[in-house]
Length: 105
Image 1 (spheres, rainbow, N blue to C red):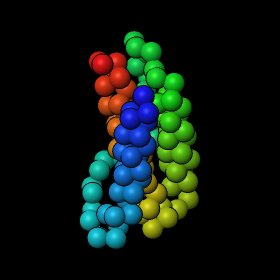
Image 2: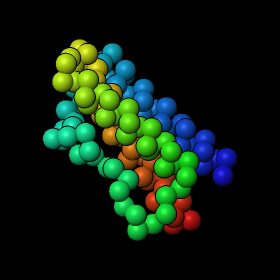
Image 3: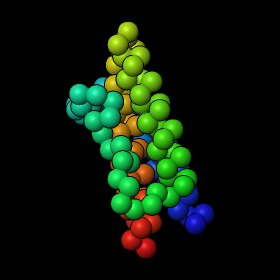
Image 4: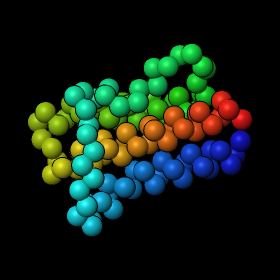
C-alpha cells in the first residue's frame, strides 16, 4: 500500500512540475482544455467504488482546476493558468490509471 502511495505521489509531483518545465524550455504543449472545466476526466463513473485517497486527491485537483478556470475569465496569468490546467488534467489521468490498476490487482 505504501508503494502505491509513493507511486501516486511521485506521479502527481511530476505532473505538477510539467508546466514549469514546458514554460522554461518554451515548449508549447497545445493541449485542448475543452469547452468547460469539466471537459476532462471527472471521476463520475460510479460503477466501481472509488479508492478513498485517490477520490480525495481527485476532488482537490478538480476544485483547483475549477478555480483556475473561473480565474481565466479575468486574466490568463501569462499563460500559466492554462499550463496549470493541463497539468491538472494529466494528474487526473494518472489518478484514474492508479485507480484502474487498484481495481484490477
